[in-house]
Image 1 (cartoon, rainbow, N blue to C red):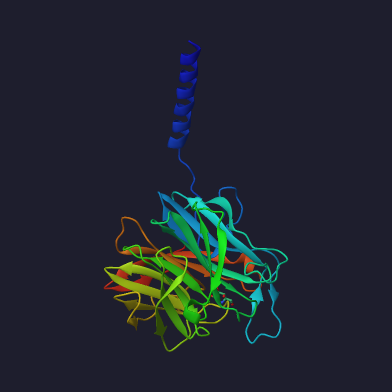
Image 2 (cartoon, rainbow, N blue to C red; image 1 turned 180 degrees about the horizontal axis):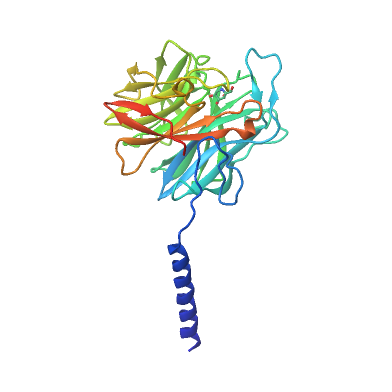
Length: 335
Ligand code: DGJ
């Protein structure tokens, strides 16, 4: 009898939950450029980030920018910094409500020789899953405060949200590596794409099968202007690369390039942004492009609106990217 009563109570409780679930649930809006909060009401701290879709859940990884912003002395540009805070992770099933999963890769305190020391630069982390090794692999830009180190760092985990174990950093094929992104193709081959040669070229380098090291297959993409902030996506068997100009934390126009293969030849396109504000990428800088499931012509363009004198207060801009006649088109939307 007691068993039946317990079962009834459990059923009643489930019904109650289901009724509540059936009620109108307020999904917080994500107004572009305003503070976005996680499910606990704290501002989302995941800058220069990227998304990983895994088993129906989206994981958002980004730079933790926390603390007072300061200006590195004696630089020829506005080298504003906060202590390197490591990499955060948030998860979501609906891309609106974001749960804080914690620090996926922590920075290190008091070890100036370590790549991840708080005195260094940890930027633009991206994560992909390796089906063969069943590991989640993170690549990121690690650097010295004056950007003279220019290396690509790699970390690995058994679980999507981490914690990740840092394995070290490299200059792929001896090449400088600054702003970085990661792309896994349909054939499971993966590539790092990074600003190199003092930002004069973007380079694409095929990774080893375990995704943990660069191979010797790489290409240099040249253009008339320096490039940063790479974001790659694939559409109709072609690869598209959106990048920014190099103006520190200040916004500038984006451009895209297109290729039949990630290792090139790349052809320069133009500015994918259109309408008022296009000339500054709507006061933001690209970081990632995600294909929208079930919408073959539509992608999510993710960007950062940096606040250079208060980097912790930098905001996010997520806009729809539509493919029109083989060209990416990004227009402003309020949310
Ligand atoms: C622009 C880069 O895209 C950012 O990731 C960061 O490195 C800033 N420059 C630093 O000024």
